[in-house]
Length: 229
Ligand code: DC
Image 1 (tube, helix red, strand yellow):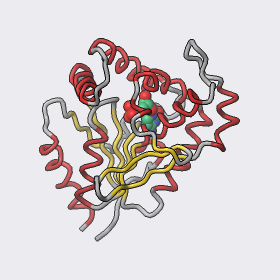
Image 2 (cartoon, rainbow, N blue to C red):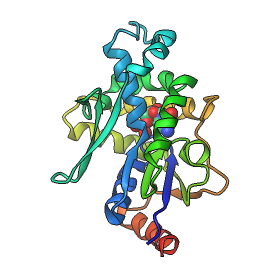
Image 3 (cartoon, protein in one colour):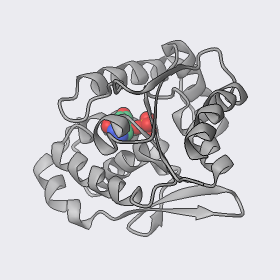
């Protein structure tokens, strides 16, 4: 069977990662959550005093430190989940904090950060057989991807999804706080000069506001099956 590259882009909390993870599981593909990579760099900046108390990032210092940031993913066949490591330390939980979510927009707008992560992402997809989700995968990282999907859902539905996710993980957050964070990130994603969130012309639009994961899988499997046979 032919191995392909599947690029999934879309708004924050539109369900990209769950969808991409399921596709990867079904087809035995590698799943890469590029949002986690931008979050990892943000977390590194926060841990190393490169963010001040007002949330401003010391860009020059962060750029200088980029060679010291090593991001890797490791798949655990027992839990069937992959974890992200920053310089060898697992940081799955840390990167999901509201604090990181608040600062990631600034970090991901730094061209040098994007340049480095895009290069790493291309390297990860060299052998194909990959599902990558993010904001600029179909437009910048893999403009020649075999299948491109652009995901969206109503903002209030996205906010509720993130709220449930965080609450289930035992985090104390308010729906209002989450909604504001999502709207702020939508704006930052769309208006960023480098690698903005934009539907690639040849991407298929998927609005999953009223779709279950099973329905989304049926929709996408039909397309993938045609491409790999
Ligand atoms: O998918 P997420 O919400 O975990 O992504 C975190 C942030 O990273 C999001 O605010 C936008 C940014 N991001 C990006 O700029 N480019 C990507 N390819 C993926 C994420």
